[in-house]
Length: 489
Image (spheres, rainbow, N blue to C red):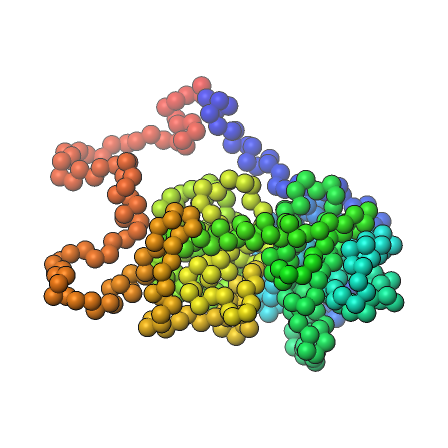
């Protein structure tokens, strides 16, 4: 019975997580993981306990790296793996549980500011880049030497952008080089003038220039990738970049280029559809997708205020990493909103795996705030911090007496006229003499209760007072996979 209907209990202990990469040769550890820079970071701070955070694919090298660092620095190293949410975020909670005084993050990173101050150093890796092939590809994609273009890259190729710009600058006059937006050390002052920070990158714009004036040339990706849409870093760039500007990508190995305009429009069309689903929704599930990124509490309060103002019911769910099996336990929820870092929000999900759509916070803002988007600018914001007060993209909710709440709105999915928020209709004085209402009439019911009443099976009947009372007896012993009275068969 055990092998037919379920997996053996030992399988859960023997299961491997993720797809481990080939172990790095010991002679290459110093170069691949930049151990010399990490040793200098630990010694400068005088840390005795340091946390090392690895993604799943690099855990095979974690033991050798930790042993090498302990031998060199004399400090105690703690390996952090299997993070509760995304491995791209700094796991400050895990570091605090280990009593670590600093943290070293290996692999791809979203570079979101942590919720608590902690000295952090990032090791993004250095992927080889063929500069000559990339330079030829850039010239083929940008024949106009006066056109403004920004050089972008995946995190592992950021080390080569300055060298690529050196090859291009003799001909191209308006070339801007982006760099990873590493968090400033604790207690350090920000540079003046402060560069623009967006998409986890810094852009040293000249005074009077705007990022929306520039096209983009992205170095990264691979021709062997089965699905290019699986890269959340490139997806957030395509969604947030100015729609009227050219955007092309280049493989750093072969120099093969691709115009990303079609893929960007597909991503925007998908997001517009999700906004319509959010407008039709009555019950919204807010998924807590991070606890270690700054301002996640303020963002959660902001999203709850949005749903209340739009007349929707919201529920906060803390489930760790969202999976179809977890979310299927809440069939009364119409849409889910994942409150996570930019890369976690846009992380790829298998097509059709979730029975309800999973949205980004920006899509809920567009669905519930009638004043959105700001005049003259309609970006897709991938970081929830851009929606909060103090951000240049923040749009406050209109006052209750604003006419924006009364604008007729028709669903593009069902074709029905959407009703105004419940508080708006209940606050309308109308003419009570012509529409008498009984004193005990139920004006508004819970959406969850309405969903339960529409189901054919509503759970076990309580039958209060109809079941005879009997004495308690001993039940079955053991676990569900093999009770004691079932024997060994």
